[in-house]
Image (cartoon, rainbow over all chains, first blue to last red; front, side):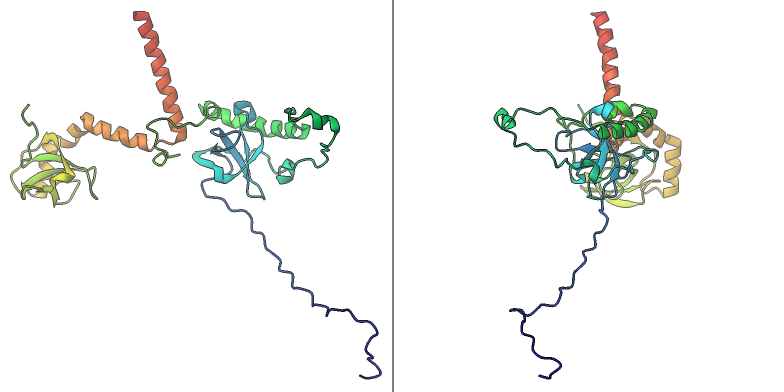
Length: 179
Length: 129
């Protein structure tokens, strides 16, 4: 103990631990099987739109697929779909002209300011609330589908194909079927 | 009804199983109760089991153990390949292969075509009834 460095009157009860090395986790871009590319017609296997054949538009950052019916053909809007629940067919259409660059995962995030604790709503019970589709979604849907419908219309029978649902019947062996 | 297709020298057979499956060959000699020697323009000369081949209606006139060149000439003269392609057996094999290779869109188009055919037939049947 020298005069220059006197023991301080206060020191913390525990030794200060050296700052931990922050291990920066590197997020790789999501990977997807080779058969799914933008423009592939894809069969949705689960969820509200099971059996529907839709057009895959792009792979989002979260790893989900952005998909559109087109809405006028089969009622599937711009939607995210898990590629694990999807069969990729070998039918591909050219969607390079379709602009989906502004649609990301944030486009689909839910509004946080939904206060549901009003007394009236509490007593009303679980009556189904009418779905409200935002104007933004409608605008984007129209923008995407206007181009998509033209592309789909140029191939014969493709519109009818997308309108029909995929089903299995007797004698169908899905493990032998080529998609 | 007596047998029509015999295991004999010159009988054209279709190979059903093995690396040469789907090819035609001619029986040029019989080895024993279970095997024969085959040869042909599509396959090489080999001994093959009866269980791997199917007899067809076609034959060619050759002698036992005919050489490959003689065999090829005999095929030409008999028009074997053309006669085979004309047969409904060969056509069915091609159709089966095509059906297995259809993709989902193709299957949809087939369904629509069958529906249209059905509608035409039913309409006509109604008129005739």
